[in-house]
Length: 263
Image (tube, rainbow, N blue to C red; front, side, top):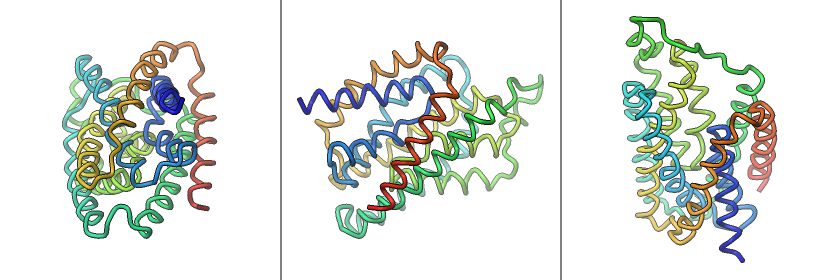
């Protein structure tokens, strides 16, 4: 019965990801902690690899369609992956299962969820504020950030946040990209966000695995549910109002964030 519950949880999160492109780590980690009683460090580690595998399919699909701006992915990865490795080294030194680290993870996760809720609600209210296309001959300019150091800085912040909480590469990442690359169309922003999340969550997830913070049988059950869920969600996307889902999702994330901070 418990196995079916994990598969269903995976399907539910996959469905939301397929519908909105947001919600992987933001939903799965709190579900594992609150509904299944999984320890925060184990929930974070397992969810990181869950995110890496679920977003890999989306990246391949976007790359085939020519929507991934690899320069943007490289800019963010240059900041996020070193930050993830430093965070993993510190977790190894302190001990991922220690009471202090567990407390830091739940508090940081709560704050990350509140940030994600705000970013999700902002996108739902403001709608698609990014341009729909790049003017001819301005492709290089569109993939150039406001300042060269900003992707490194924001990448480092997101890398640290993702490694500690498994949250941050979704709605927060999209909002950051919209600010840093104002000329980049929304489909390319979303594609870049999904693409750079794959190496980041893979590095962070494998790092957690080396610390013993990944439940492999649990990961298999979650993926068994999420992959069909993403397929169903992506096919329902055009039939269900995205703003309604994003608004409800932001309320759910804010509630989970407040509960985690209060733990």
